[in-house]
Amino acid sequence: MGKQHNKKRNVGLIYEQLLNCLSKAVVDRDLTKANTVKEIIKNNFKPGSQLYKEFRLFNALVKTHVPSESLATRIISEAKFASRNFDANKLEVEKSNLIKDINYKLNNPGFYSQRVDEYREYATIQTLLNGWRSEDSDITVITEYETKVHQSLLTEKNMPEEILDPEVDKLTVRLMLEKFNKKYGSVLNEEQVDIIKSYVFDDNEDVVAALREVKEDSLRELTVYKNKCSNNTLLEKIDVVIKNVENLNESSIDDKNISKFLLVSKLRDEMLEKENE
Image 1: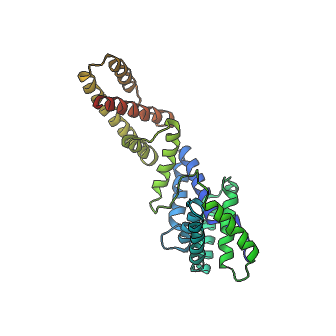
Image 2: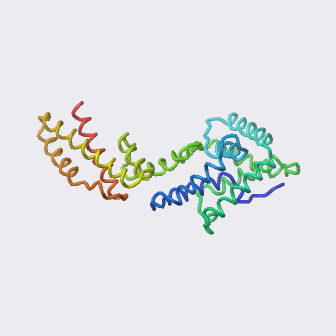
């Protein structure tokens, strides 16, 4: 069926592996590697490029859920039309440049062996895109793969929708947000997001300054709240929170300490919300 599946030229698969690599680098605090991965994404997935266009099309087929068979059929028809309007030669050159960047800049022999849970679906879609563009496609195989994608479109997805943003720094923040969201089981507040952004992108001195500000602001707000509070139960709790805030060490820059600041921010917000109820 024309070009068969080559995982190194599977735009969706490669993008997920780049995200995995970026996530690990951020968690390991390997900012040099994280910045390298971000530069690879920025330089290769540029809006307007053929690679970017295929990624958006690929992503729509992988992560979209629709409620009706007729709509799924229409999406596949539109995707087929769009795939044939790409500059195929330019797309292949851009994929080769992406592979070259990964090989030379990351120098990671195990990069292409990184596990991606949706590998089979990604392989199906890339093979289908190749088949739609090929002049010698096997109609039987094309029909089989279109049926699989059709069924996938009708299936509810557990994965979060991912649309490539040219500001790739947002991807790094998203990865850290996901990591801490899992820990707390809820959406982070604005201050928690700012703490994570500082932790991910700023120098240690700036992170220390940011944490010190959070600590000082929290103590000030909690003290004001304590002086106005008449609820004995809450007063006992606030004394514990204030003590925990006073014991925070803003000079320690690691996941464990960042988690403490995030927790204090959450507890403080919860107490202030109760005051306004």
